[in-house]
Image 1 (cartoon, one colour):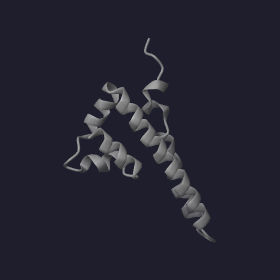
Image 2 (cartoon, rainbow, N blue to C red):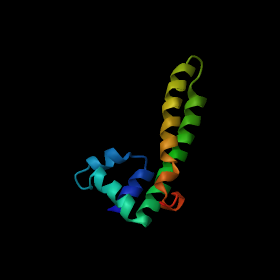
Image 3 (cartoon, rainbow, N blue to C red):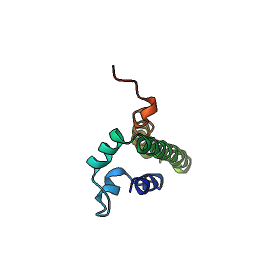
Length: 102
């Protein structure tokens, strides 16, 4: 199940979308796994980082295809993509990058 979640993330699906699938676990279960299973947290983090890279590629394509007059629309979409990339590439997903509790 955990592997399927990461594969679907790599395919571009969001966690909410994945967890709406009746064959999948809830979002709460995924977050629980992130705290209790370090290997899953690492795999999940890598999948999210790849998602951020894919969004970067899409943003470049968007800018290049905006054409005359499309800049304002592209600018709004890019702002949303930047915010999403920041969340997806956060080190918080990687247990090895988290500071030790102390």
